[in-house]
Image 1 (cartoon, rainbow, N blue to C red):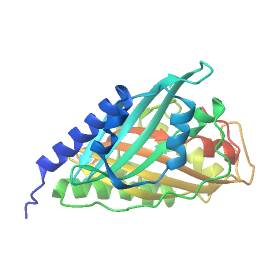
Image 2: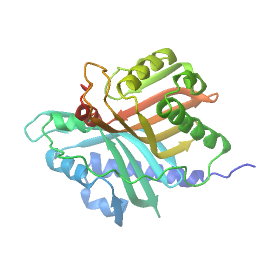
Image 3: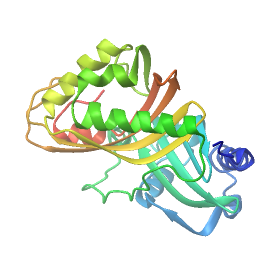
Length: 279
């Protein structure tokens, strides 16, 4: 059975979000906000948004890796600007928008708060977890559903069940890795397995939860929560006995049924709070 995909809706939603970034986050035409957001839109990180507007009044954002999936648009954003004291800001975030009737109805994000903390932004105690919306939403092709299941299987088997011996089922031998902040994880399946063997040794109870997922063509993009306890040593830190609750956004390019390429945005602040040095 062939699934009919509303390609026009996906394209319109992608264009709306690109227009939003151009008007609000590059040209700073904030008087047009109501054109892009519903009056009753739900913001799942209001403190983070207010912090950026307050501390970095001349922010500019550029879009990377946008994926439009039915009523959802997920993307990476590069934010640049200066603090009020003149320090440079270079920040990577991941943003997820749910659209309704041509405007944003709901927004989630992953922010590398470690960068902001280094510039003096105080986040205080851990904030409540953003509500998840797991699973694909709306119609998808068989290939898109298979790609989503591949990625979910990797998080289940490799990261939560710690079956590194199954990594080759999900990743190509020469897969490429791109972290928006560091090159700590090199390319290739063998390096990947060695890196995460150290992770699992440091966090023996490591578990991943996929909070959001979108899939379009050969791309799958997810928001993930990583939890565990630093009872081992890794990367110059630990064991601290402290808990980890870290959020990431990951995009995968699937080729011939396996991950060929991976990009990620990581909130490194929680890694530091667990007792490990950050990149």
